[in-house]
Every structure is written in structure tokens, then in C-alpha cells.
Image (cartoon, rainbow, N blue to C red; front, side, top):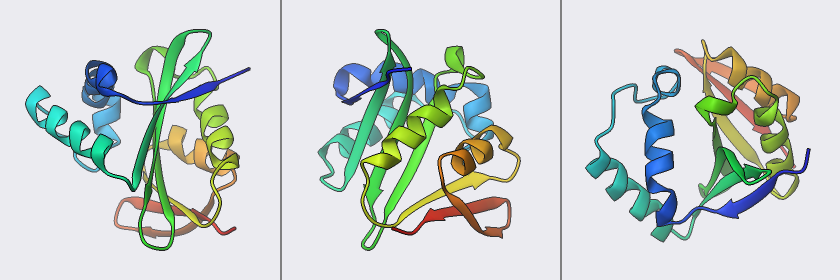
Length: 144
């Protein structure tokens, strides 16, 4: 399966807003509240301007199947991902995170909610290792 990664732009605001407010996505996010479009837009514009943050839209056959994000945090990359609600359960998550990690040098960390079995499996299959569980968050990492 040939996935393509492209940097997100303001054109992606609505799509990412919809994915972020999806019930399953919210249930597995640190902030489970619905986000207003205005707040999302402010956040997203700030993310696009931040030189330590890279947000990509993952595309398969001209369909946006998910998003991956990396943020430089002093000594490591913090990554996160979301699979489009319409594309869940089809294997895109593991493939996109695994491929995304191929192009990242250095230490990588990710946080996954304890009840988010799908993302736990994605993290493990992509080569991230469980470090510790604190409260309801599993902290994954890859040392490289």
C-alpha cells in the first residue's frame, strides 16, 4: 500500500476539525471535550507557524486516510496520529506510523490512553516500546 505524506495547510482545517471532534477520537484524547471551530482554527494556525511542529496529511489513492504529527521537544520528537473515522480498521494506522517513523532520526515518544487498544497496537507494531504507565496514559518510546 503506497501512502503519500504531504504537509498540512490551512486548506486542511475543516477536515482535521471534523476528525478531532469525532466521538471516538475525543474519547481517546487528553482533552475529551468538543472543540469549537474558532479554537481549533487558532490552534491549527499556531501549529502551522511553529517551526518545531510538522503536521502531515496521509493520502492513499487520493483519499486522506489520516494525519501524523511530530513536535521537537528539546531532546526528542513527540508524535501523534489520527486515522480518519471513515478509514479505521483497514490497517492504515500501523502503515502510516511505521512509514512516518522511518524518516525520523533520534528519540521518539508517544502517549496513548490506556483504553485506546487500536493506538496501542499501532504503536507496538510500528516499533515503539512501552516505557511506563502513569494514570491512564501509556508512554511509548523508540531510542535511536
